[in-house]
Length: 55
Image 1 (tube, rainbow, N blue to C red):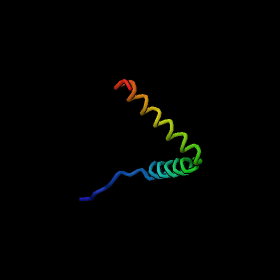
Image 2 (cartoon, rainbow, N blue to C red):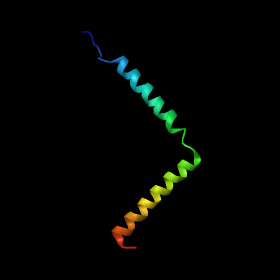
Image 3 (cartoon, helix red, strand yellow):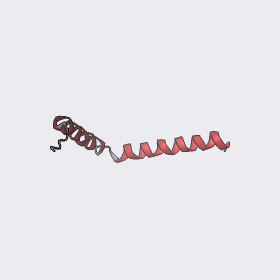
Image 4 (tube, rainbow, N blue to C red):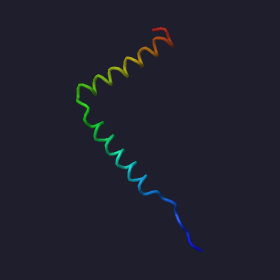
């Protein structure tokens, strides 16, 4: 009995390549952008608690 796997190597290669590009782009964030992002998340969390618990 012969076992075969259906793997699309071109599709897998494209996925790996696109993941590597995303990783390269994401590492280009400056320190200021990172802290702006963190501040935005903290503000969203603060707004959530303010609306939910009233403080």
